[in-house]
Image (tube, rainbow, N blue to C red):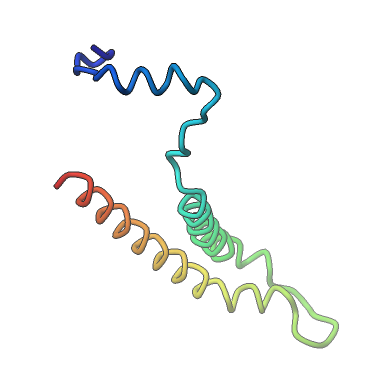
Length: 101
């Protein structure tokens, strides 16, 4: 019996006893974790730019000011972050449905 009260076959325990140095498979997909982080950064960064837009206004010495470029791309960053978030939620829902069939 395992800690949850489920029956454990003796074949599984024999395999683990023979290979004590065997590593368990990584349960978190690193690409999915990176996408979650990227999504949070895009949404948070775009929102931060909008919240601090008043502090970015000022005179420029010519050319295209960086603050204008950052403010111009902020809505697209938020949109990309939200699109990634929706795709990740859909992916997790499909994974959950596949595991519960």
